[in-house]
Image (cartoon, rainbow, N blue to C red; front, side, top):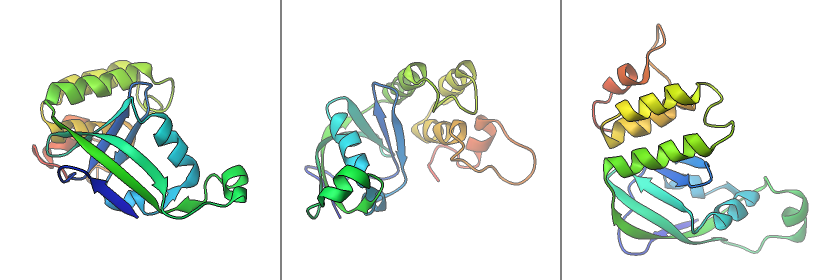
Length: 171
């Protein structure tokens, strides 16, 4: 596995957001160690329209994503979920503002047909995104509405309450 940021260091976690509604939360660089083969084509197809927002306010774009080793015909045709190591090159597009990340997430929620809104309705999610004022709170709001966020024991908390566990920083 090789993840290379061409001109700077990418700081995880990262939210990959595509204009077609696809969003991926990537907790750390280990994500790229064992990527299902079919995901390579998914990322390659979105290469020009997908941006990766890191926790420190830097925006990235994928330059290339390729398997580290040749992939056999059987895997390419029948075993798309077989995991392979990949080589990924990213290029920094410079810093981003909180509003840019918020708007990208809102467009994804508005564009998505069922994945991002499977646990909460679109209107509620958009309100949570509007209420999140920091990068950390936007990351946590995403994790909350996709159920990747586990609140403290006890009653369920709304995202703002859950976010207060971390303040403005990320988990």
